[in-house]
Image 1 (tube, rainbow, N blue to C red):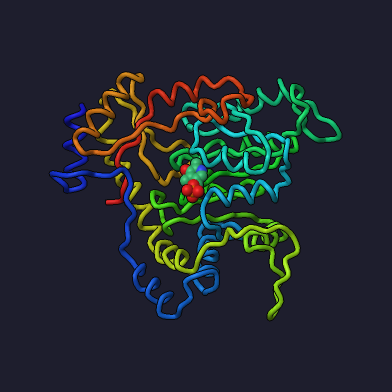
Image 2: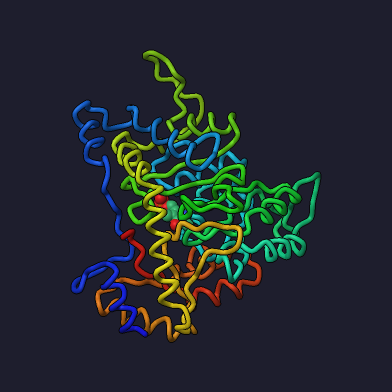
Length: 379
Ligand SMILES: *Cc1c(COP(=O)(O)O)cnc(C)c1O
């Protein structure tokens, strides 16, 4: 199987020799033209037309009413948490199977992550596990959810759409509403993925995107906040741009803001990438189809999109038989120059989060032992 897989990847990428990375950016459009325009006009920094244009394109594409650009996905999450009212000493529920940015952003606010299990099939936060944890741990006081063990308020919940596969976001949304918990979707990996035809990141109070170099589209580094709330959108723009009051020459800032804005240079890249996004998604889905056919009846599970969802197939994923087979697969493929990698170490196992409260995490542990991401660059 390993040899067949290595040969298959080399064939579809038309690269008989040499290293094949996991996910390379693709620049086939107006990237150079727009970047040159920034340099020629000197608008390379925090002022320029591309930032607004990029925000408008993202809003239109995702169906979010408002989109606010930030310097990366982590800062977008940080601001989403602050504007959701998460305070020092409170708690935020998320999944342990995620990139460290999700848990880091929670920590930046002084809140503590609480880890709740994922569903085996979606690899994203499980509504069943969420309800179970809340039923066992929450007491409602004046319509606010308090953790009975720590006496802290559970202020927000951040599900993540793992590798671009939407989680059961409608059920999670209903549970959060019932418990008066703010819903923030980490949609960093799921630009182009929909649940019941609605774009991921548009279900909660906020959604966040990332345009890091390995994501579906890239701005070098960049992120975006999505929201349908006009006031929150205004606040998000204000607080991410040093909270400066508009004035012809005065420098007056009305709260402690953040310099989290995206540069015009990065946004120029973003506009060029957005022009190609529908084509990228189409090609990523075609690639996934090829893998799906290749792995059919192979004994290895290829993760396909679930009912009622459309996945962007950001990173294609396999589920191997056990950790030993996973490690063998990683060894053989990487040895042969085909980059593959396991899922992230679970958040609850990292030194800074090991003492955080958690529910039963058996699905996350099962998946972490078996997931392998395989070559996903658009062909
Ligand atoms: C990429 C990613 C982010 C954001 O990362 P940045 O590098 O800060 O843009 C956040 N959450 C998840 C799950 C991610 O994969």
